Image (cartoon, rainbow, N blue to C red; front, side, top):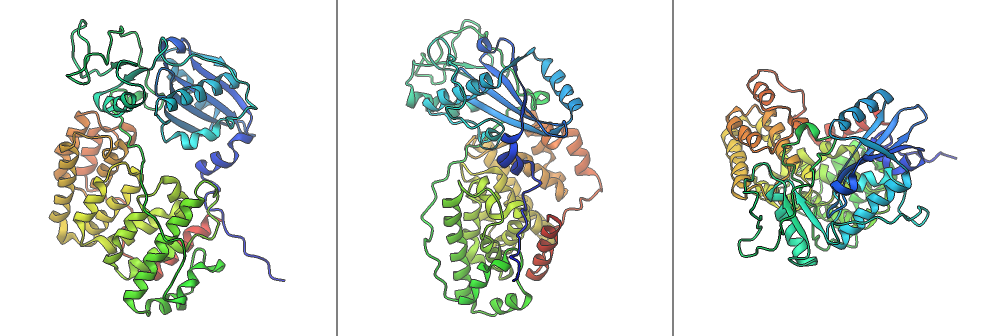
Length: 504
């Protein structure tokens, strides 16, 4: 009897996948919080779990008990005790930490989240992952009552006016003007001590003169960039209806769904499919992609591994790229309107091997459409990066289009500026990806625009380094070793198979 082929778990060694599936099995080592947190309102909470090796998994939760719940979260994976001691020493520079029980940490974090959700405010999207460092929020955790809000009502404290513009409409809608207090903690905003801050010139009751005794404490992993105005776009996408049935003109495409075809196809099968009539073949491939999007969205909350039967979407995108099917561009972009979790499920670690090159083949002559996609509000910044990568493919493979590409980036910078770096479309991560891609193509012409972003405190040194470093890299002759070769479909399958065989 033949043995069933075991498919590789591509995410097995990923810290993110480990956290989702195994973190709660690790014993809790300790939990820490800032001293005086109930008076300050904004605090880091550290939940530390211990591996058998003695190393640590550290969850950081920047928690606002006055209004916003979990504002941010982060983790340090496989952290040595020595590294952990250094982290604690560094965080303690901004104020003492004290030990609390896990039950206390859990109730403070989830209590703050519940309070914020009652106000219409969801936890930062990073919590979708870091929640798994915490125990599941069930009745098994003893309930500890804490007071949230400030003197009986929400107290919104924001680091800049852009952040204020995100939350004030939510509070106005769900709480009502005058039913919450507000403080703009913006070093760039100057006002007299006796003056109230008014978000709306017509309304003078948004801020009722609360003294500035709320200490803004930056997150430990952004502490070196405390002046940076971190902007995060909240993912919200109202998806259309996707096909509910797989209806194909060409039965040959059922090959994409065979169990043995989960990461590769026989060369003869590829040749057979490419010989099918182009128009109906592309229609079938588009249908497969949209059908798979709909199917995986339904399963998104249940799939935890990447070894299920959902590689047909990858195969379809490879064929779309090989056919240089410009008529498939909308379908490709639809895959990038999905959530980051969807990307993990559909492509695992191979998204960058699949989407940018396919997007290059289908979108190289439709730059305006690619720019329009970048401008779309409330999409994941880390999926928009694939558009930027496709632009790099054009720059590297079609150098004669250099000035056309530069004009594309210039329009993008103008858009960010003209919309006043609106949080719906502008994301700190996105701008750092833009800068990285400009470094790839040595676009020194954009150094003034990049410096302007640094001057506006919109770029973190953790992401791109200091401006001087960016300038030096841009003006150097050193080339990166990233692969922007326009491979054909046969070579793409060889590369992806080699990569996934190494992951076994």
